[in-house]
Image (cartoon, rainbow, N blue to C red; front, side, top):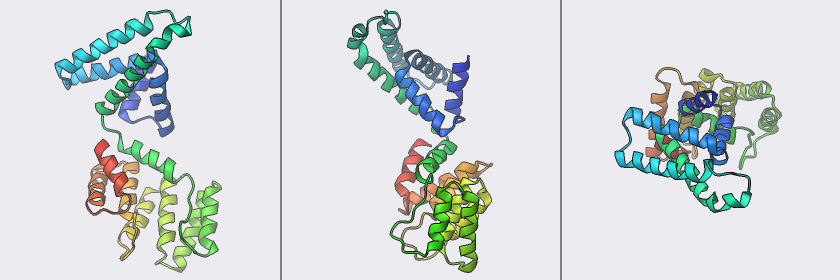
Length: 245
């Protein structure tokens, strides 16, 4: 029962990004768990009448073969399992494919994974800005986001056109879950004219995805579509997300 609740949380997008990774790794390494996931997928699909008869039959055949070769045979000798290693890997990949196709990835999950990958540490590229900006980045990277935000806000107060400071202030606000504040900074960034590489619209969508209040996800999707259509900064990521939505 506990496994079933855990699996259900995965498909609802309720697991944290790190736990999602552990879930998918477990599918590849834990055969009994993979079986449970496989039957969960098959049951949900059957209930929703989304599987063609031949696909259901094919899955049943694959599972029966896997069950006969891996579950009911004694695992006492490793070399007895060697001939089945390739088949197990293929089945695990098949299950992962069914998982991916079962339900779109939750926007919050996509946003959380992006944050973990891109905002764990911050750096300035091709920038010769004064030490005040570097001070804010250092504070953030040292695990002091509140102090970093105050540093960026101080810079903005002195120079309201400091777009780089506004970008980082928005990112730090997002990490602090100050979503309204982050949206305000990203809106200003988005509307700044003549900026060669402007992630403002993408970051605005990202923040809506993370906040997930009523209407946020639909608005975020529309913004991501604009990012792709206008070939804006992060359009490759936006396109990938839209394909999973």
